[in-house]
Image (cartoon, rainbow, N blue to C red; front, side, top):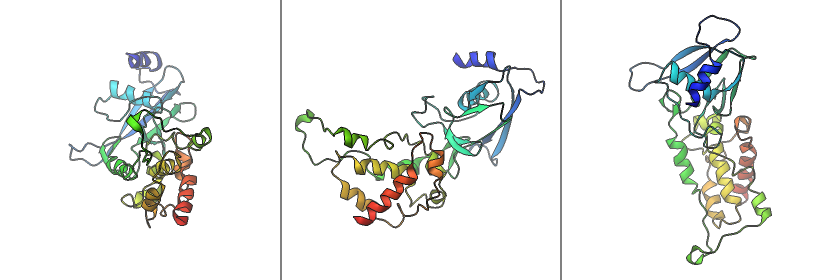
Length: 255
């Protein structure tokens, strides 16, 4: 196994405290135990000072220290968005976030803030995906395609307009960092969903622009954004949801 090779090469199983010794503090909660949430602190010692991905550290802890540790992961390439969590106070993807022992000997990992917790680092994203379903995330076209043999084409310029939008992987890092979404998660759509809404709104192949704008013409769905821009700061794909929300505010008013 690849992870077993990592253990043998990078990690020292001796317990002498030196400059290579560091602590990983992880938020824990188990719904089947009648206990309040707690922290587990795992002392680790590297044979050499290496820059490791946080996801690799979680794998190592799960395989060697506590097999009950629970977290989501899938692609390990920053594509699926499964391993989103709060790492040292910043929402990020564990597979893209590195931990360098030269700068800190402490690593603290929480689940995404202000989300319902299922277990340990796993959040309940039911409300998040229900909101995604509400925006109808598919092309609505009035053009009849005979026998589905003709492609629905768009120009290169129209396609260029989708850059900075289609890269969103719905990891919820931005929404979980937004104070407006914390307090109004049942009404305000949040940065991630609004960015996706804008993507379908400006797609030249879509014919439901008025329907989508009417859906946004609500006192809570868009206007609750106060321009704090936490969403832009934490986005692991370097997108700009705050700017997109400002565009949506403008479009929803002129409709």
